[in-house]
Length: 314
Ligand code: 13P
Ligand code: SF4
Image (cartoon, rainbow, N blue to C red; front, side, top):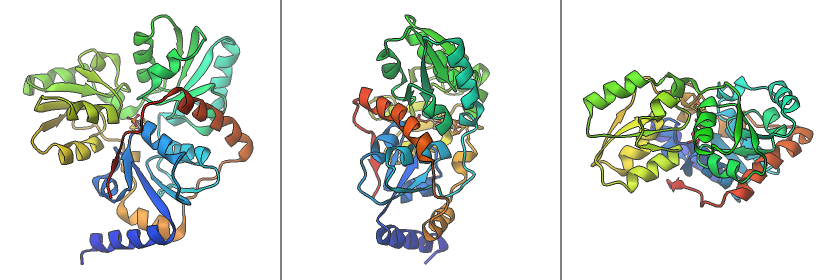
């Protein structure tokens, strides 16, 4: 038995004895995506977290995802296998930033991308994910929209909803922002036949060249429904795992070699086993804060009715 086989066998044993479910985002390491019970994008995982029967949710992602799961399942134990796995973009916007925007624009609705801290969610009217932002914002009666923290998704939404006035916070996802128009031009030259699929967290200079813009799950669905054989991938490289597993006959090229989120790569199978053994790091949110933040997530779930898109791995 290899060390990896040992880790997997121990994880399976503990998972059963603790009635745990393992959730993984598409940006996680392949070894994590393979052990997980469900792999999905932020939207699908938030929906799942609110409906799972298990007592224990092990969330392989970053802190805002595990916190969202806890907000939606307050009675359950939620653990994030590596405590410091955190989203740099979510950490760019604080509650005081949001409060000062609220004070400046009292008629505006505050829409927070789910990639935000619990403090920011508690001050928001509604949350959204990259997969449902347009539907969520269109559902609001307000003409003015304060959108935090991602300026990439914010400018994308503003371009599709010109009837509303957007007040954007200037946060960004470092790996998505790093992708440049030059990367697109070089990649197009190397693979002229490829379709360019990008995440809305990319900047406008990249998005304007895209054949398709969507969340990770939407990119995966696009590939599944396309007759094309060759694709340029404009999002974090973890998505290559489900794409190459499902479509060995298709060709995938990363838009840049540096499309890696370090925080999404922090959790390994060894961390996962350790967290099941020690029950660390458990997510705790004070109920005063949780009751406010939960409302914005629940409103998002109420206005979105797409079925969850997940891959059942085991
Ligand atoms: P989603 O496709 O899940 O929205 O991924 C975006 C992301 O950056 C998660 O951190
Ligand atoms: Fe945050 Fe970007 Fe990493 Fe997602 S990919 S966790 S948005 S830094």
